[in-house]
Amino acid sequence: MSLVNIDSLRTHVLRLLGRMAPPGGIELMSYKRNRTVALICRENGRVLVRERGYVEQEMEVAPDDLPRLLKTLIKREFPRSRKVRVHKFADPVELERIHQKI
Image (cartoon, rainbow, N blue to C red):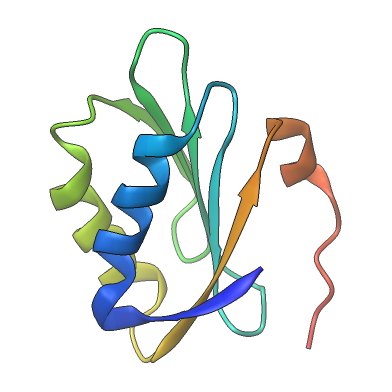
């Protein structure tokens, strides 16, 4: 898990997702770990976006639509953050763990 500057977060996440093999993905968390956005790679080439924070929703998007959606999600879920935690995972079951609150 690493802390990434919010200004370079979009490019960092898109670069990491390009290297991921399904069913792996990336989880973005606020510093306090109380808001998350999970990006899960699917077998069909699409990406499942799971948002848990101010808004709770799931949606499946094409990789071409991801940069614009990611910009919206980052502004909504991490409005005053300067750093965001990035966690790579190999299996979506890892998302069900209990996050250590700070």
